[in-house]
Image (cartoon, rainbow, N blue to C red):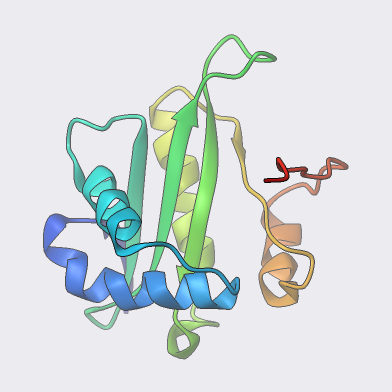
Length: 147
């Protein structure tokens, strides 16, 4: 049984290994202080510019999605950036990723922010197969500041 619900402060122990798996997938890491701050912001009821959902599969937290609302110079209103999406290896193929994305779509619609976008790496073929079915690939290429 799959269910989607908002991330709660009591989910820290279940969320943390998923977050670590997400970072490892992208061959990345963040300081513990960043992880702590991220979870605190995602579960702060006053931080209405961001949100998060978890996917529960048979009562176990098996995935998450994090999203952020922000201003955009090409829209009168805000847009929604789906920043992080991860489903555990054991839960993949059960519709959790799609359900998490659809939860963000619903939250964005309820917020009056129907424009939702996200990025992934070129090598993320499994996720891209889903993204190609539920989104539109844009021609934009991301650049980042060189430090």
